[in-house]
Image 1 (cartoon, rainbow, N blue to C red):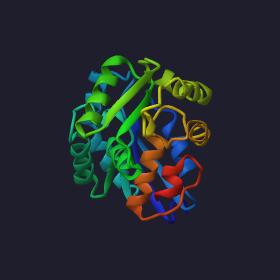
Image 2: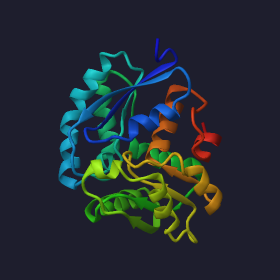
Image 3: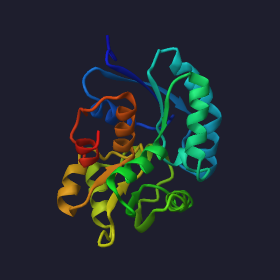
Image 4: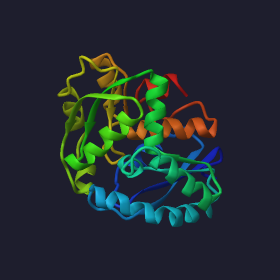
Length: 238
């Protein structure tokens, strides 16, 4: 039986093509991923807000698979409404599913806490209106974005086509002199192959939306190992 150790219910944007493969790699043996989708084609503020309407129904569907936890796997979809929006979505999920819930934006904040970071170098694939929402959310939690570089891609399937080498170059273009940590945002951006290399080259902790989500999911489940080497967050802090 798959999921003999734990079954993870994962809600992702309908156009997300990256998070499922990365989560499968990041989960250790015996932990399985079971997905539901909420409609989103373009990563715009309007469409990110609209996703919330489908969260409760998706949570109820995942509960029928007898999952142990439900994860809302969208960074900006869980922060677009500002401070506390991620917690609101998690409450909706738990109410609908009867299961513990994790939202990616919450996982990002918790990762920053354990890494002891205050100053963030931020890399994203987003357009400006979405970047503004993310910076505001991070600042509302007491963090400072010291540099931001973005690919400014609107269509989510195009974000899913970005190569790890492009992500590497995007991160290396950041000014990290005043940063404590590098955060690569977006669950549809392929990152896990380059995080260890980036940490070595930059001499800083580097994490992504997917590594933060996997980390918090495993911690919530009480599982202390990962299935793929992708940065010190997963190596040192599970």
